[in-house]
Length: 330
Ligand SMILES: Nc1ncnc2c1ncn2[C@@H]1O[C@H](COP(=O)(O)OP(=O)(O)OP(=O)(O)O)[C@@H](O)[C@H]1O
Ligand SMILES: [Mg+2]
Image 1 (spheres, rainbow, N blue to C red):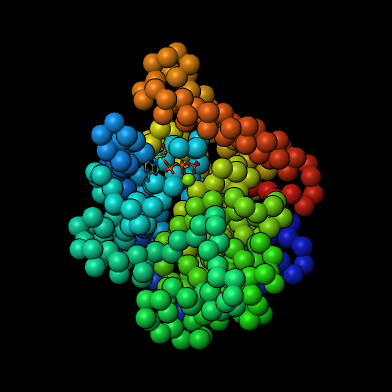
Image 2: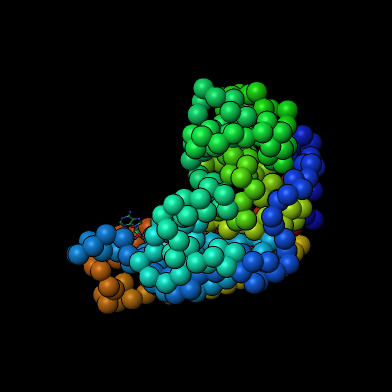
């Protein structure tokens, strides 16, 4: 059963958004060959001197056009850093980010600003909506701040695409958490980005509203070929993706292909994340960890993560038998 089938009447997945004809996305190889985003030997060190933290330690991976990838891993494993570097929001210390074949690091600051504006969309856990503005005004706000005129039809199309055509004049306080996150997604889609990046977009949402947002992301991929990279701690959320990339200590520790329609997928994902977590915490217990206190901190974060994964695994197991639970695949 696809996730959509579990959505109650009126939820986003029952609505079919109108096409955006000039959306520059495709499942077929385009600019940059098979990869919408390619990371080559990506390194990122935050800070300097004795406060330096290696967040990404040589990540090489490609994300295909029109694919939906979930990035998982323990707290502090580099997920947000990877997303920020891949989206051109943060500058790597080494290696390359290629977006549709464009080497982002080789661009001037001005060209990078244009690339961020025109070719990527970013959604955060915090909705960053302005409470005094309507949904439509929130969607067009970044463009307005950038002194760009946005045709009203484009704003309407973006809201329709997230199933909120009838909520354009509503303020955030008049919408559910899931609807507010969908407004944030519409805002990210306004520039018709080649790649949509989402950092824990359901992190602040309950199960039902999470499903609403995840079903929407899945739909954007399936209907419009919207290449999507999403960070999540939740294996149930990750099961909506085509593939799960597991990070540990700033490196790719595992990659899991999701099998459509397999209800054990969240449990499989949870097990893979727990495996990578166990593998990385072993050296710390033996007292051979790099970084002393910093490492101890990440192990504590990891323990918390393991708890979250276990909870999600139980949820995944429940999904196998429970009606109305989000299910793996699409
Ligand atoms: N601006 C910064 N300055 C210094 N260190 C940073 C900075 N941003 C991140 N870090 C460190 O880099 C490492 C990776 O951080 P990152 O935020 O990418 O992890 P994450 O996997 O997203 O974690 P979480 O699941 O908690 O969000 C962590 O050790 C973090 O403390
Ligand atoms: Mg993060």
